[in-house]
Image 1: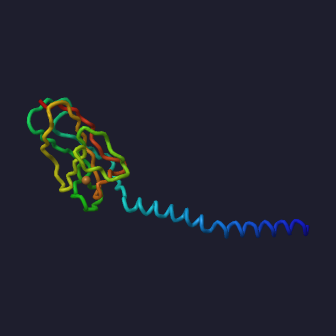
Image 2 (image 1 turned 90 degrees about the horizontal axis):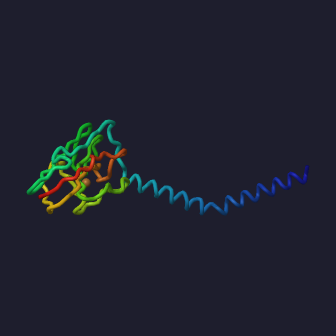
Length: 161
Ligand SMILES: [Cu+2]
């Protein structure tokens, strides 16, 4: 019995020592986890409303067009708010030109392939070279991050004469 108690005491001490020794690594992990969740709260995704539908109203898939292309954005089920305004169930449009959907947990890129309409615009006119092009819409929240689940239109293919 005494022997068992000694072992138990030794284990207790050892466990105490291990706990003491690993305080720093545990805190380091906690810090890492905390800063991870900090960065995800710094870049929050907004929930999208059930049944939201995003469509390119014009042009239509397969259209053959000349001149500047007027693209009309159609959003049902959610509203439009300018970038920077955190209003529930809203977002602003992004037109993806000749590119795929971006990383959904990050702000949508801003370049020739990813156009932001942070003013709340619902249509645009773009110059496209002659040839085939793909167009797709993606809604982004006030920080330009796609909603969860994302609200994207089907991609369409048009031909510019
Ligand atoms: Cu944006």
